[in-house]
Image (cartoon, rainbow, N blue to C red; front, side, top):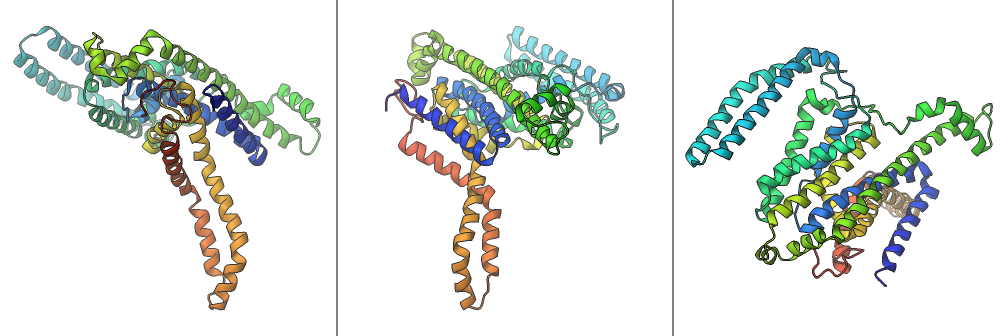
Amino acid sequence: MSQSLRPILLFAAMAAALLAVGFGQGWPVMLVILNLCLISAVMSVGLNMQWGYAGLFNAGVMAFVAVGGMVAVLISEPPVMVGWEAGGARILVAGVMVATFSGLIYALRRFISRRWIKNWGTAALLVAAYFIIRPVFEGGVTAVESIAAASAGNLGGLGLNILVSWVVAAVVCMGVAWVIGRIALGLRADYLAIATLGISEIVVAVAKNEEWLTRGVKNITSLKRAPVPRETNLQQAEWFQNLVSTLSGTNPGDADFKTTVIEASSIFVKLCFTGLFTIVLGIVLFLAIRALNSPWGRMMRAIRDNDVAASAMGKNVVRRHREVFIVGAAILGVSGAMLTTLDGQFTPTGYQPLRYTFLIWVMVIVGGSGNNLGAVLGGFVIWFFWIEAEVAAQWISVNMEKVLTPYLDVVLISLGEGSLKVQHGVTWLKNAAPHFRYLLMGMVLLLALRFSPRGLIPEAGAARAH
């Protein structure tokens, strides 16, 4: 199969699979899967820039996705005035103190030449900062979290349009990636993996426990989704009811008109998200492809393939690694904000390494490391299988029940056992259906590594397989 025809056929097969879900399980289900596939594709492109372009093993994808989700909350949530009045000022003062001590430490290490003064001075400033800032910060946090904990207990956000958070999430994640890069880049790949994995757990721990910031495990719900309307608002809008009446051929007085409006509102909102996410994925993909085909992209691939030779030719390997790491982190942050926007809520306990690190890695590997179209295809394929695996397992268990029960009944009745064990076995199969996806992901990854080690859409002219 030619390299130009292969992507077309693979994407056509993916589209056919989504259409099959639409006809078989309903169009709302298909659109939910499609929207999550689009977000997963953005995540996959972000990781592909780090690994496929530069060979950076980022084991903390979850950190940047979670930061993007937190930024979406802090930008779109309205401020909680009672929280600000109770302890917001003290938390702001603590933040100013942190910035002040950070500046002092930077100046000390930047302008003092004697090493012993830098080291002992840094240690002294850190100890002083801990004992000075801690009582101020903890006093403010305690005051905020003790006010109406069931409905408030946090400071809220800026109350801006949630789309603004997508841009802010990219900027914040770039800053986080810069800090990580200053610490971990330049080390061996295993040290980078350990550092990013540890930082991702720190980020999620902050999201779960700092209730003054994110409400922690109490979650934040009903986030504003502008410009996408809510289903309840659509159902009450006269223009939408007229549109549904025109398209469906029903009248407001019909018995099933209300049900039709509810179903149409769900589809309309999901289609709005589909259009929005498609635009973002298109922009990200266009910029990623342009970057890959630019002199900068060719330099990154040269560093990836042989960093020693690139360094010998005068390239600053650590700096270039930091650049691509920051760019990939920005894309992951945008995807995290997109996911929170789609969900309409922020749930810190939902951030699991299996979903937001391992699965994204599988998308990049299966799709084709170093190929942006392959990363997009991997995002679609893996998420589709991840969702539909449980449905397939349920279907298999139901059909096994239909086929095997009569025969097993005969055998067990002849043994005096009755059909209780048969029913118990079928129930066990149904309960085990959600776990089938783990088996399926392992099979998909093994088959991909065995028969297409460079991915479904390999990197053009790649000299090595990741």
